[in-house]
Amino acid sequence: MTTTSPDIGDRVRNRVMARLMPYLVLLYIVAYLDRVNVSYAALEMTADLGFSAATYGLGAGIFFVGYFLFEIPAAVMAQRQGVRRLVCRIMVTWGILAMGMGFIQNAAQFHTLRFLIGAAEAGFFPAMIVYLGQWFRAADRGKAVAVFMSAISLAMVIGGPVSGALLKVEWLGLEGWRWLFILEGLPAVVLGFSVLFYLTERPENAKWLPDDEKAWLIAELGRERLAREAAQTQKPSIALALRDPRVWLFAVAYFFGLIASNGLGYWLPTMVKSWSGFSSFTVGLIVSLPYSLGVIAKVLAGWSSDRMGERRWHTAGLQLLGGAGLAALTSVQAHFAIALICLCVAVIGLTGYTSSFWAYATSFLAGTANAAAIGLINSIGNLGSFAGPYAMGWLKEHTTGYTAGVLVLAASSVITALLVLAARPSTTRHVKVAS
Image (cartoon, rainbow, N blue to C red; front, side, top):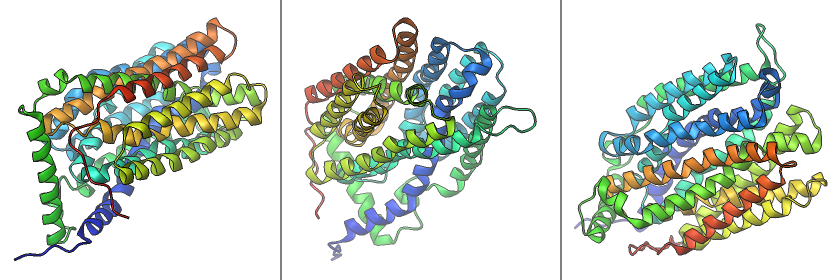
């Protein structure tokens, strides 16, 4: 009779994490840099091209309209046809379009290219969540998602100094903000092709896993899939996901969560510069500070969520913390050092919640239904990424300063917390990770 080593779970988890996660994090860093580099380019671009706050806010947010339209089909395609080729196509396409941003001349070109980049990138994130679900057990998924999504904060940490430095260059008669788009778009094209050679589609294809570890992982993931399918009582399908009220609840919660996080993220460099008067490079360094703390918060929250087997309060608690930081910020803007502390608190909350949120949101459906649920939650949610930056721009033009906009972001964060608390825990429980 075959016996299983008691530590095989730890060995498999560590081997898979070491093999896949650094590469996946790198891909997402590049993806997020191409998404938010416009927030740093805005420090110079808006003046050069004569854009108003509303014009910039619309361009920052319209990315997510294209993203919304193609999210669910791409997520289902990742489940049915595989991740490698899909991600390759996505990255090469958005990289080329992102580089094209370096040649825009007017608002129409700005808005059009931002929309197309969003449409091209749609599917990358849900494909990655589907992919993590094919490699990590439910008990390990919170930490895996946390490490993967730490790329968002890492992109902001890296993007600040790099983008600030690129704004200083002027080569071949092109302004620094144009080179920012060109040079930060190029890695997506290169890495897109590398996906075909490095990424292993499923555990069954993993030549780098020893036979006993491969068999154990396949068996564990198969057992969990069967348990979720049995709990569904219906055959996994797109329609099942679209009919499930929990999916819509998570989608609306994510919508308000992204109003808060991306409404802040796309305006943060401009806000910091207006409050401090520092150079663009210094602003980039300052903005990297709260996102450095966000990396730590995200990983710790994912680890704690896995260890305790609890997702709901981890998610809601961090959103409430983010809302508190934003609310406090509105009264201390004149005192930059205190404002920076409030920003750090806000970013910790607004970035730290995502690991437990996605582990929670993907815990109750299986197969095609789960992929469709991921796509729907992310697509509806990312409409908040359109609404947040645009609302900030509109409110800045029609009110005094950033106070009204920041209060809207704070309220959105609280709404997310309340909606997550209203969600019923999944009936499929997972065991806590042993220490």
